[in-house]
Image 1 (cartoon, rainbow, N blue to C red):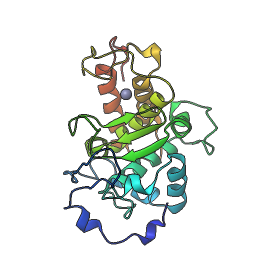
Image 2: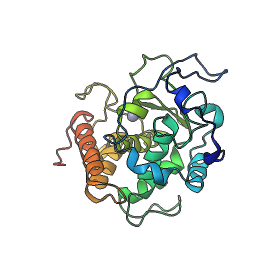
Image 3: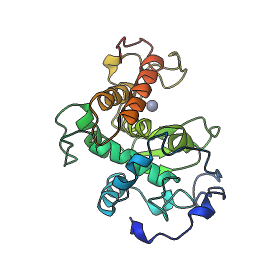
Length: 250
Ligand SMILES: [Zn+2]
């Protein structure tokens, strides 16, 4: 990762210019930064923690991030600008990495509860993580993220429709797919896509809910408002993403 303090002053420009995907990508895509509220979605809280060279270097390596996957307006040249996708992703990575009081200091330490092991799990399974406007072949806005086995793509809804807690949990969700668990419930849950049969399957939806529930109850280095964002997202996924409602009271 290039030095985050030496970025070029392009922020004002890219905000009003469509994203342009780098030459050589699978499709030509354009998109722009939609309206968003960095305070209301919790992003601002993580700005100081995420804008840190050592941390950014760590995430950049762990998530196999590359310049060509994050330039063209996604933030490579402005990595601390919370209006751009890259900084919004780093904010989510900070939440995922540091929200346990005794957070894991090694990506090979899987001990403790979900609030603690979620980051090591994600770090070991995410694979190459890249930014696009939308999933190639789909309608813009249809998907927030997609896992391909050894890599994951993040799209505009991930960056701007999800609050920071939902973004963190989505990184875990996609990593669960890359860890070998696809959705097994077809489209018959109430949200109509990406359904898992039940809680016991321990799929991506279960990981997502479990993590957000722990975060909402016991998360540190955050605020009560952001913990509530996590609980609300946990309830939504709990209530809509399983063919058999797990029946918990979150
Ligand atoms: Zn999924």
